[in-house]
Image (cartoon, rainbow, N blue to C red; front, top):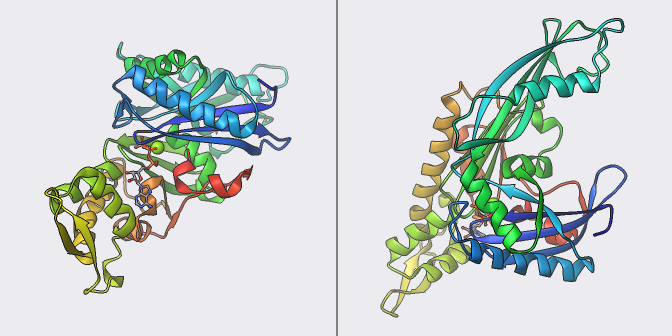
Length: 366
Ligand SMILES: Nc1ncnc2c1ncn2[C@@H]1O[C@H](COP(=O)(O)OP(=O)(O)OP(=O)(O)O)[C@@H](O)[C@H]1O
Ligand SMILES: [Mg+2]
């Protein structure tokens, strides 16, 4: 594997996406290869069949290798799922004389003390993300390194996941013959990809995938909270299948071709044809389909809103950014804005070059 190459794999519920890129001098990534494969062996972001997920990984990685012309043996892996949770921890370190100046080592020391939390046996730490620094009692410090002080306090977000769920992700990769460099929380990965620096002062990032919706909340340029709900686009497809009495594959096609939630803009006479469970053709009003989809999307958005509001009011968050495959449903971004009562936009990966037209789409955000 070449020195400056990086590779990442997103093991999603519906697709496995492998990216091979080259890191430039400013840490920007030029994408050299992309490989997509349908994901098997996952449910709601959790591995349920290792040999199947390994096959999907091999297929996606081989495609990316072929396109880039490089072979890879280790990858960063995005993780998600309802087993992920986050908690807050604090630590204080004293700054040693005679310089009384905070160094990178002091900062690292404070963060690493924070990461030592008492966890249940079945949980392990994935990331320790600093979210606020206090220097000699002074709050609101963005970067303490280089400051004069006698005491540094750090408040971190400890992101943990289920030991067995994470082990099974790693096992899927080792079974596929690929080493895992590190695990990366998907919502954190997509936030680096799609949020602008100024948006990190306050934003809700929603990654609406197939089996999961990942939520990351940013405030004061730091990750405030993150969680994952085990609902996503697959549930919408399921609702359409039941509501229209059509097979799942037909429901998925109907959703992608005709699905939308912007009800006011739909011509009431607009319709499309489907083949029902018995192979009979039927006409369905577009507005009827929109009604089915809207109920589910609203439910997902309201669940998220309630979860966020448990921590406090939403009013400090100026915007919502929606990404992931389900953000492509017409009107979802606007509906998110309406439910959260704030401006909304679709999130596509920034800071990448190379195969830009291929990766600047919401399904590649992580
Ligand atoms: N054009 C489209 N319109 C509507 N929905 C779409 C469109 N394209 C993809 N989707 C939906 O997006 C979902 C997949 O999104 P994505 O690729 O982000 O998920 P994933 O990463 O595989 O899954 P997860 O993140 O849940 O593990 C599917 O439910 C799919 O039906
Ligand atoms: Mg995903």
